[in-house]
Amino acid sequence: MLKDRGSVDYIVHLLTALARLKRATSAELYEHIKDTPCNSPTYARKILGRMANSGLVKANNTDGYTLTKPYDQYTLADVLEATGSVALHESPASRAEAKLAEMSRHIKLDDIL
Image (cartoon, rainbow, N blue to C red; front, side, top):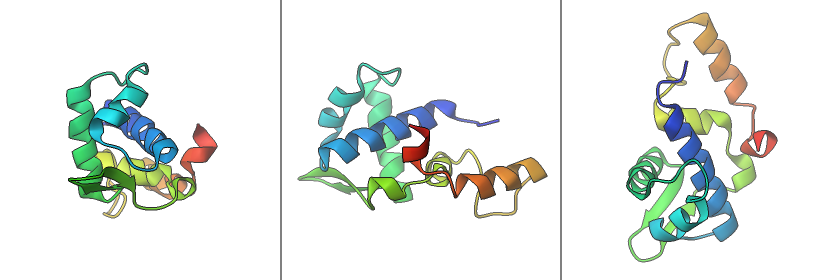
């Protein structure tokens, strides 16, 4: 079970919005996701920081955020690693977690959206 499902939703919505915008500030990104279940600007900023720390996006004080790779190369594993929901690079806690880690590396965000 994912520990932080809300973060997964926010990350997917923010990555998708950023793919459309190419470069955006947190306010611009929030405008694109505010009509989704991800409608907290404060939490969106927190998640953007987590995304930048994990390498999903690049943060620039003057230009805002950009993707660190083409959108079609992001996988479910990238999202799960950013949330800390599943430790994909460490020894899995269970066989189920190991299987999830392996499968998630092959699932592109484009395939699930």
